[in-house]
Image 1: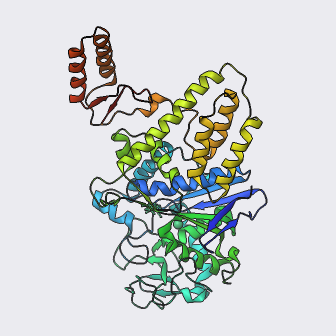
Image 2: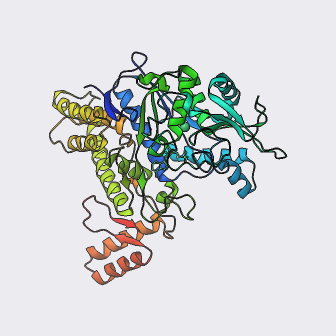
Image 3: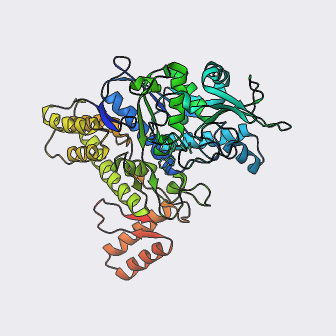
Length: 482
Ligand code: AMP
Ligand code: ZN
C-alpha cells in the first residue's frame, strides 16, 4: 500500500517519495518552554509521533528531530510583543535558564506519559546560536535590511512568499505594521537587537549588535543543520501554517535558491504537515486562564494519560477535535476494554510459543495498513485493531502478535498496560485503595449473609467518600472514584 500524506504546501494528499531512498527525515516544531504545555499542544506531538511510527511501520528508517525553543518566541507570532521566556522569567523572578529547564522537564514528562517515542534528537535553540548567526550572515546581503530594532527579512525578495498560508503578500491581513521602517507588512526580524541601555538575560554578539535570534530563524537553522536541506517532512500545529512556517520557508529559499515553490524541494522540506486544533468551549485551553488544561490535571482527576492519546486517535489529525470530560471518559472506557482483552490474551498466549500473524490475520493487517497509509486515518485503524481484539477461535499468540504490530503505530502501550494501571486515584480522593477494597469485601460478606441493610449502608459510606460502587459493570470494574 502506498503511503499518501496531505501536504499543506499543495493542499493535496500526495504519495510519499523520500528524498533519500529508504529514509524519512522529519522535523517537528517543538514547544516554547516558558510554561506548561496544555493538552492541545500535546495533540501536536501525538500527531507527530503517530506520523513517525507510521513511517517506521512502512519500513522507512526514521530520523525525527523536535526542537525546544528557549529564546526568541515573542508573545505574538508576527513581530509584536515581548519574548515569552523573558516575560515569564520576570514574572516568576527566576533566571530564564531555570525557567527553560523546569518547563522542558514538564514537557518531557507529558511526552513520556503519552507514550510519545523519543526523537533521534531534541535540538535546543540556544545551542545553535552561532549557526543561526552564520545562516543570517549568508542571507543578509540579498534578503535583509537593518533597522534600529533588528535585522529584517524582506519577503519580497523570494518567489511565492506566503504560498503555504495562501495569504496575500501585500498587507497580509492581521499583520499590524507596528515596526517603523518595515518595507512590507509581512517582513519579520531574524535578529532582534537589544535596545540601547538595556541588557537581556539572553543575548549574543552578532554583526548587527548584541541581541537574540528570531524564532523563525531558529527552526530553519536547526532543521537544516541536523537533517540537511531538503528533508522530507516538517510538522506543526495549524497556526504555524499562517506565519511561522511561511517565514521559515522564505528563509530556506533565501538560503538555498530563492526559486519559486513549484519545486517543493525549494521550501527546505518537501512536505509540510499540520495538525488541527483541540478546542474547548469554556476557554480552559488558554494558558492565561487559571486552571488550564494540562495533562497533569487529567491525571489528577483520575484519567489515565493514554485515554487522552486515544481521544486524539479517534479524530483525524486534520479535523478540529473538541475536548470534553465525557469524551475523555468514553475514551478511557474504550481503552479499558482493549487492555482487558490483551491481558486475557497474554495469559492464554503464555501457553503457546510466540508467533507471527498467520494468514487469518492478513486481511486485517491489510485494512490496517490501508487506513494508516491513507493520510494517517487513525480512527479507522483503531476500529480494525478492535476487530482483531474481538476475533474468536483464533490462535492467541498470533492474535497478540497482530495487536502488537498495530499498536506499534497507534502507541497505546497495550502490551504493557494493566487494568490496575488504568485505575488512577483522583488527587482529591481522601480514601485509599486498601480502605475501598476492605469495605467492598465487608459489603460482599453482608450480601452473602443477605444482610442488605448493612450492604446498603456500606455502599452509602463509600458514596459519601466519593466512591461509586459499580455492581454488574460490563468491564468487571467494581468501583470508581469520581
Ligand atoms: P507552542 O509551545 O505555543 O509553540 O506550541 C506548541 C505546538 O502546539 C505548536 O505546534 C502549536 O501549533 C500547537 N498547538 C497550539 N495550540 C494547539 C491546540 N489547541 N491544539 C493543537 N495544537 C496546538
Ligand atoms: Zn518552528
